[in-house]
Length: 449
Ligand SMILES: [Fe+2]
Image 1 (cartoon, protein in one colour):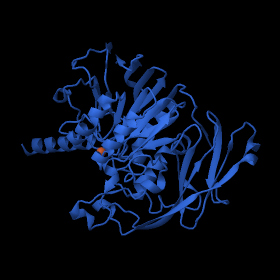
Image 2 (cartoon, rainbow, N blue to C red; image 1 turned 90 degrees about the vertical axis):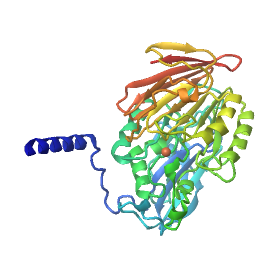
Image 3 (tube, helix red, strand yellow; image 1 turned 30 degrees about the horizontal axis):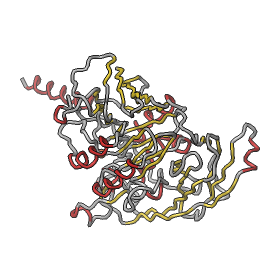
Image 4 (cartoon, rainbow, N blue to C red; image 1 turned 120 degrees about the horizontal axis):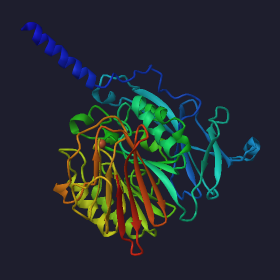
């Protein structure tokens, strides 16, 4: 009897072990420390993408100034002779006496003190491939190429990813690299929050930069913070439940500052070739952003509007709901006909539209007229939760759902057609739909799955 009991115990242990993730990679103490040579180089859209682009990078504190050089790229490498040099804005980030890695036992850098440098290259030509490099005049990055946006509403694609957050170096790396392989023509990438797990942890940010490698400095990005980019900064903040935006955020991103004044670089909009992209910070100041959101939608000169935020308007995972954000922002999405809302947070996949209650959709193609806003929740990291079976509680249809998949999305806007494809980390197509906009601005949704 004892033998049988031990066998059952041993078997259950082996099942638990088989289902658990392996240990996360350890890093040497200096692994994420900045050096004199630029790292964490990141390209951001921050203004008119047909004439400007921003780049930000990190160095050790010994490097107290920086430069960017830029030229129109040519086949003949001597194009670098024509490069224009621009002085960077340098900021210092002191990293002392912060919460010890949010009360985990992992090591952290409690006394880092290093510099960030940023430049916005302006007066660029539209639809032109440039090469740039950054450095201090002695220690430089490689020359990095990117292409500016068109001035007109030409077709374009972008990538959208949900939370990376955990096992970023170990397992998000394959996802982001597969995304770039699948859509090398994409013009930029959107990250909808929870890029890392522990807001102020420099080691995790270093994981994020290492996982994306040169993609981060080649493909411009837009990002917003999730709840995991808000954590107590000092020990005294913990009992007060006071959470602060990642201390790195405003240093290491150069994003638009055209949102509400209190949320620079976390609430903003950008117009890209006929689409208004609206970034909402779903962590704080919901009411203030609601007023700004209405103005931003009312003044949209384009046919298309895409919003992105972290906490979903309609939650994908069981036992989750965000009624305050839904009550504040869904009426405006409806009123101004926002086409698509891209979200994260729930660690599963859900996609539906607000117009029609139609469950049990069969596999294949079906069409919905007057589709209303399409809402998507997606996840790019390995952490997964159970997905809801339907969205009956919200009175809207859940057209496609899934879990236990790392996913990225490639979205193309071509005049009156938006094509959406969701792919798994191994490049398989997981979900697909199209929106066709008629002359009255009403969308027909064509599901393909
Ligand atoms: Fe989250």
